[in-house]
Image (cartoon, rainbow, N blue to C red):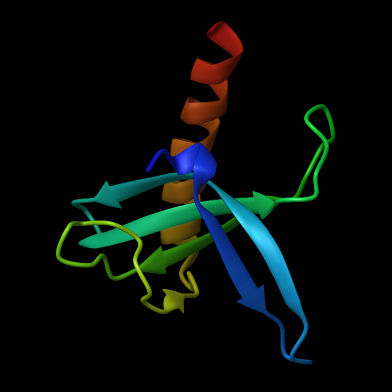
Length: 95
């Protein structure tokens, strides 16, 4: 399945469910973790959106699977994720 087709339902602290699309996933050797970047599925194509990022434990196929998303807590880890996102977005602009 392409990342563009993957969807994840997040549940907030009030029990409200919201559907998100997977923008992309990547692995970091420096942190020994896998990451997923998400955006709301109801967002319009040209709309600016808040992208959410989480670490996750991949399944046996190294996919997102049914595992739990893990919040990113360190500033250094956030900086790395932001750098990867900026590179991804820059590559998209060149296409």
